[in-house]
Image (cartoon, rainbow, N blue to C red; front, side, top):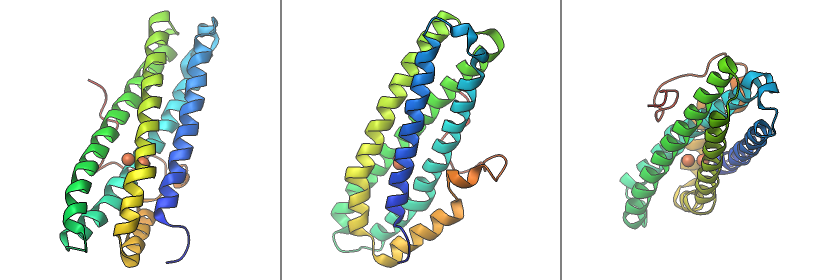
Length: 200
Ligand SMILES: [Fe+2]
Ligand SMILES: [Fe+2]
């Protein structure tokens, strides 16, 4: 296997997402600084949120379409220990995907508020709501990334054979990364957990 492992790639994306999330939180804290109205009507926040949402979208797609199918195949082919591993992974993957959906919803909600702010200015109650949403999203993201880094990825790293790891790498290359997104115009839709579906 040449190059970096797909797990290293995905872990680096966690670091990038968490950094982005920190920046978002400081922008939201800036909104609380008494000069809420002077923040360009939420445009800065809207741009940051747009970028965060795109990064989330592609990262989840890479896991759901790049990594998990290979793991599922490995289990169905009955690799050594696959029975124990299979039921465990089945639950974890489901848990992981519902966390993706929850995170995507929070990002959508924040973006909706930021868009409203851009039109109507930042009122106190929107700012409060954003602050709460940002804190919650940050918590969720940290917990989610830590679980993948310390539990799910190591488990898959141990279970997948080298050629299966190569398959994952190939698939991730096909899907692309957030680094490619800026050259792509709008990100591809499809197959993804409730992203961009609006908030209810
Ligand atoms: Fe994930
Ligand atoms: Fe992840």
